[in-house]
Image (cartoon, rainbow, N blue to C red; front, side):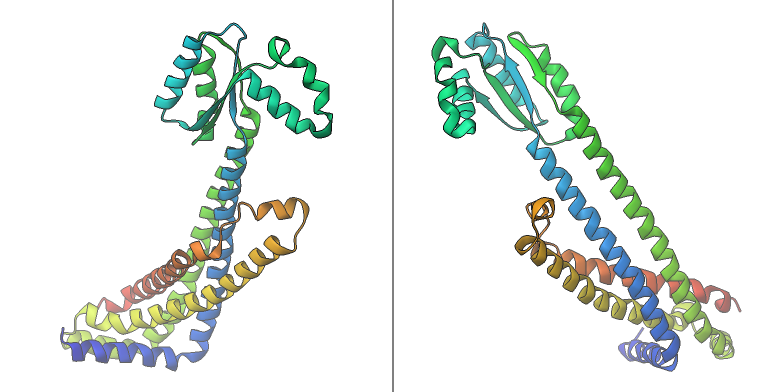
Length: 302
């Protein structure tokens, strides 16, 4: 197809968009509303996952060693942790270091523990282990419980279960909402394009009889759908970006208590805006293009 033909077809699509101004504005409004909900839902899922990862990083598997554990036992566990792909990082804490940490934690009352130094130290040596995947907490705990010299392994399995459930619920709920909103948007755009197609059904029939291809006839209407999707995406990006930045600045500068803690794991807007913009435009084009294509099928059968 020549460039002049493309230019003509795109101009026809723009004219269709302007000619159905009322329905086009209504479609932009509905699609924008759907995309805003998608953006809010996506941002919520993203930050919930970030919060889950943050909480997961604060909880660790602690391998407590027996007092009679030998250097060989400790080296064996150290070597196994280095080779374990589930382990993100780990640290060995000796009996002396454990007592020192406890004394620092007690602050001005640290003198109460001064009599427990040396051979009187009751605190065990331990390995503090962080995992990449919270679902691996129990298997790793069982694995290292069997090592010689290990007294017991402390694992926050209940909290891990809550975090994993929260992550799965937000993911699947967000996915379900996304599918529903995309379907609603496609129906609205499809109805808008169908009105235009119905008004020009005789013209389309004549074009088919004189040899025009389906692609040649369909392109102006797809352009109209893409215009609706693009305008909706840009409006959505401006609204969601403004709201996200305002909320992020409020949480990081004015909020207190538990809400303020969220600022430590909230994803900065600067790191997600390119993906957000591309995602909105991509969804807008998908909804607009597919809605237009579906609405044309009936009238191309001549």
